[in-house]
Amino acid sequence: MLKKHERENHTKLFDQCLDKLKIATKRYAKKQDRWVLNRLVNSQGRAVPPVYDLDSTDVEQWSTNVNEKAIKIVSSFLNNEVINVCETPRQEKKKIERKIYTCNICQKYLCTREQYDLHMNARGHKRQVAAVRNREKQLAMKQDKQLAINIEFKKDAVNT
Image (cartoon, rainbow, N blue to C red; front, side, top):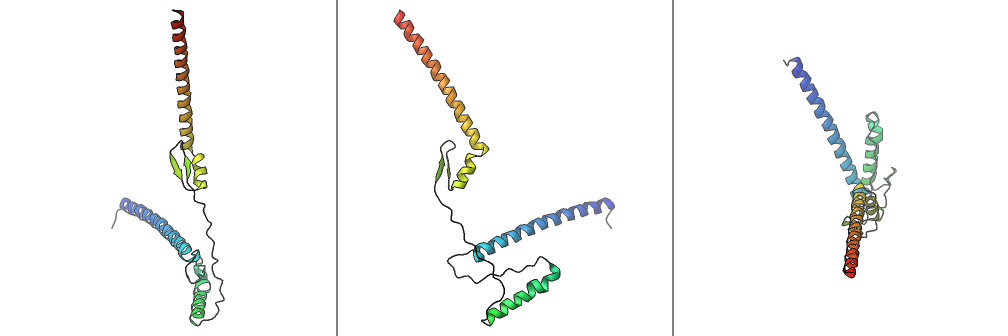
């Protein structure tokens, strides 16, 4: 038999593992949803059979929401009958205009206008812009100093 503090440690460890398992399961389900959407529902140009949405969130209603509908769909399909269940609507993929956008300050190349706009408003870009402005100011001050020194040197040369 485990001691009390060992039992507490095992309980904490079990709870942590359970939380991680739940997170991993949700991620996997999300991946599956994305795969089904991209490969079946939103596929264009390929012969893909219709996809039907079955609501499996309520376990109490499993037989009516999932089981009966699935049997009806499959039997109608096998008997070449019209399927009286709503098909999941297909969505048109929005076309993204591909063009190379360039940020000369950061030396970055961006593929879409949306990425470019995000980059222009990003903190890193704004820091680069500020650094370039500071360098330009310092260079201008340095050039002004050099010009003033050259003018003084010419005055002294003319006076002698």
